[in-house]
Image (cartoon, rainbow, N blue to C red; front, side):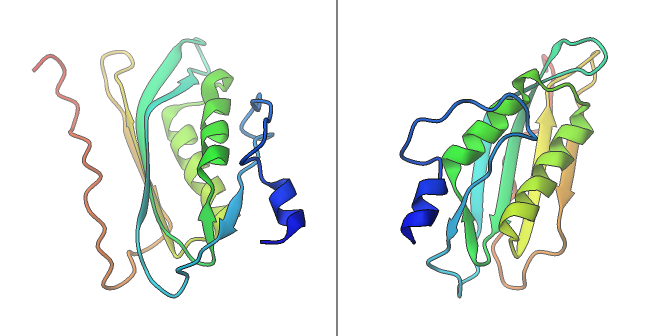
Length: 153
């Protein structure tokens, strides 16, 4: 990695929390295993955004799976990006798909999927799923492991 690239990364230095998803910076680093297909999973069990109508908080468990190409998603920048949604008003569907598309745009993975498992709003849980295409042939892509919402079951 060049000195210039190291300076632009948020990793290893103090940075301000972004106020909006649009101003958040997602960082990427070179994939040292770019000739091998493998799955990377980020789990965000305490995602928070705001209802765009009521301003009330919404909560979700996000699971982001991707197969890297030339780049890996740097996790500190993902943490900052995810935190920028805490004051962002958007529907569940918009938040989930926006995150998936932004990551895909920044790191250009061979494949990416995001599962947004939202806690009930108005008594109805909403799960949102998005992916970039088909799973690469021969890749092990395990289930995301989030149980369907069962209420007080």
